[in-house]
Image (cartoon, rainbow, N blue to C red; front, side, top):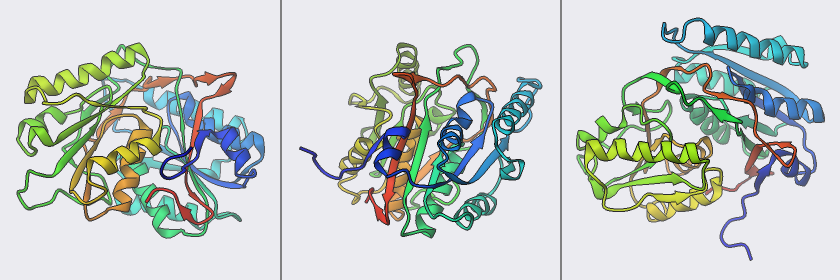
Amino acid sequence: MIRGEFRPWGNIKWLNKHLKGKQWKLIGSIATGDRSIATWRYLHESKNCDTVIMLKIEDIKMAYWGDEPFCRLCERENQYLKEGGLQKSIRKCDIRDNLVQIHTYAEQMVNSGSTDNIIIDISTLPKRYFFPIVKYILKCTNNNSILVTYTVPEMYDHRKPLAIDPGPWRALPGFRELFQDGNKNRSLIVGLGYEPLGLPQILRDGEFNRDRVHLLFPFPAHPSGYLRNWEFVRNLDSEVAPYYHEPIRVNGYDVSTIYDILMKQTNNGEDSVVFAPYGTKPMSLAMCLYSCMYPDKASVYYTQPKSYNPLYSSGVKTVKGEPAIYAYCIRNQGIDLYH
């Protein structure tokens, strides 16, 4: 028996089969990691790809990484072109692009091609890109189907930080700022990741009551990832003092269940909430979808890094011989599944 809303998700090959092999337009990114072109490769090989826009997002150059980010980005672009990608599908971007520029890429996707069905691949899209892109496409289309995909890497780099030089704590482009009412009764829901990127300082400043802070903990997780998640918690505890409750354990890939947990924590959309998406991309997607549904009740804040580790992730995880590309149906034939 299925409880609540049925929101199909799973391996992209399985889900696409049950969606009758639709033709899709794809907006994704070319990044330093192998997984950045995995969704495109699947669609290209299965001949389900109508139109493609790939954002090649360059970070701010940092001496810490040397020339490796540039070299790896070029390597991935060359691989994409060698496997059949088109040069005209690539958009050169800057990590500092503003909301108007980000909306331009989404608008180009909406207005292109011969099908209205869209896939948004968030595997390597920074949050300050994919949050407004998802919001724009949901708002500016209506009778189509929309999938969001996420490819699991084989491994993350454990020797160096995943990102450096985080920016100030601010709302993601296109999402409302903190409620200027001085009310500390609003909730803060933090998606736990590997690195807090300046979050402890925000909590130390006393913007939120401790008993209104909720931590979403990805579980189960790989042992090394599990330890890094707990280190994240310890970093917060050392700055803010221990919380009164255990983190809420969630499957970091199950967008539907995480969305339902967000609904429960906010009294079904009645309470004001601020999201801090530091966890898995699917966890962040659930926060994004909630914020799109309740724009007057939800804020999304993040400390956006200026530069990412060129070895942030490598490889593509496989499950039973298939690439671990998870697809989430957020709209099916004009019906929004997250509401």
